[in-house]
Image (cartoon, rainbow, N blue to C red):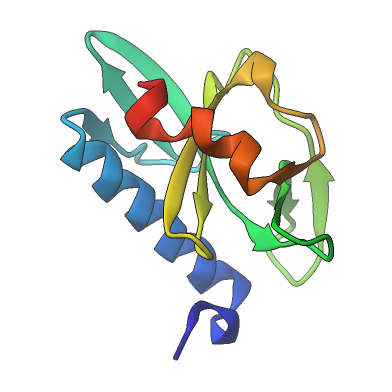
Length: 133
């Protein structure tokens, strides 16, 4: 089974694990909150605790372009949910998993768009965690 056959929740969980593993491999400590909140992990960047929201990218209809929904959702406990934007009081950075190229990109909160990211892969190279952190 490839990523395209996974449910959205399972694909998101895979992305969270991939990002955490890449950050750990890069030498950073990663912690997870015990209760649901606006960030997925806390990354210790040389003593700075960074609240990080993890997002999963998708192939866009435009060639060589990654698309990422940068919004979150609040579930009502049933099948419906409300889309919400993140704010800098709750999220310091975004880590984007690109399952197409198996890459992880890092965007500080003020670098990230509010609702959707659409970027050419070559323009994202400067944002790989290996280069950014």
